[in-house]
Length: 625
Image (cartoon, rainbow, N blue to C red; front, side, top):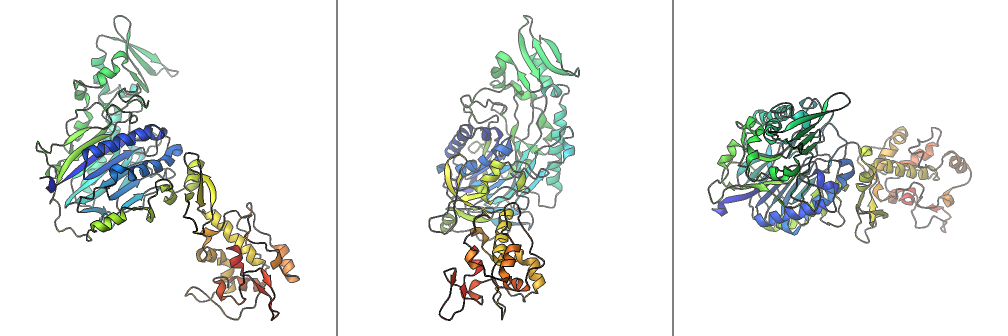
């Protein structure tokens, strides 16, 4: 029967805290996760992450590069020859940013895997390994939405939303949906109502999402929705039991609002303390919430509101949040919130037709790293087997690649459409990422995405010294921004303006367009040069002129032109051409497309007088290059 099934591993993990300590906690997380994958040997691994880049994402987003490369380069995942990674990292796009990350790995034994294009409404073959990072709004093989602000009226801003992908695996079609719902902001407020007011916020968002999947324009298919639902225990009902036979004392703040509750027993011993962001059951804290006797399950009632839409396998593991963030402590709960099952894996009722549920292949629902620090959220997984042959048998798709082709493609990685060799030591995935407002990125992160790994020796690229994320020195290649290119164009322009005129007898063009008038050339010269020149190979420092121009100046009328036009400085970028410049100079600018076709003869030296007496000079375009 195993040959007729696909072993699917679903994992949800709020990874926000592990990026705050990449040297220790991130490494521990990766070690435990990869060990679990190696032990289970799934055919497909689907990991849904929330808070990608950390809660302090501006400072920690750069560590996502290390996280993804460690996954792709790990020995445990080398036989997974196809991968799709979606990283919504663009925090400069505040109205769209969700900090969600979906990572999918397909084992070489899986014959047929397709992913859905939500714009073209068709399935596409999954080949090679591809990372889609930064701003992913225009990626067609996913559907992403951030929840409207009115879903959470008491909060100024949030990153909550969902990210959906659709798959066809051996002719079984289903959706994998990553979701992040809102948390409880205050323990005191959560106590005031049963269920709490925060449940209403979550219900508004999740009910909206499930309704959307039922009424949108796409075919209705089974789905797995897993992420950080932030479901909480019924705190009011739970405390009635935990604080039975105790006396409550209220503490009040400046506005006479209750900000602290202290419960003491008959001996005046403090049994439990609750503040806005503090929850401590003191001596019994870990004993109660490790939930060995499953007494807490009766207070996990928030899921009941969705039973008509989804179902969940029995929970036999302790609450997944909030665990200690001390790297030496993987068992204790932090005393910030009442421990709860925030991280869940829910299934639509239609998935029952896809899943083997007999005793031999009974789904396994548990946590990863039960005794290891995995951050404040323990990853939750569901291991199950999918049946083959379900779904649309008439599905149209391209022929699947051969095993040989798949092995070849797995040696490279496509990052936002650019294929590169996977070099775990030097590759930075953010080199290929786009951000809506680059200037709003943290300086440290902005600098980390402006450099690419050093090219191989002898490729002719200019090199600059830099440092990697660990602070060690490295050689990198500068990737120019728009402003860098503008400075380079203006430098070329300045050199050309100082060039002596050579009469033109005919027009040479590298394009199919007709020759434009001098006025057209004057207004569009910068655009023309930025398109037609390889500016990526020009050094970025505008003060570093490639060649000494003094020998190139001619006497007489050229000296006046030289006095009128100065080389562009860093503080004066983009100076326009003088309105009084010679028409002859404009005519010459139009000839710079290809130096081999210019009327003068290009030579290696700056200036030379051959036997004919004719003055020969270097092409100004070559001078700048």
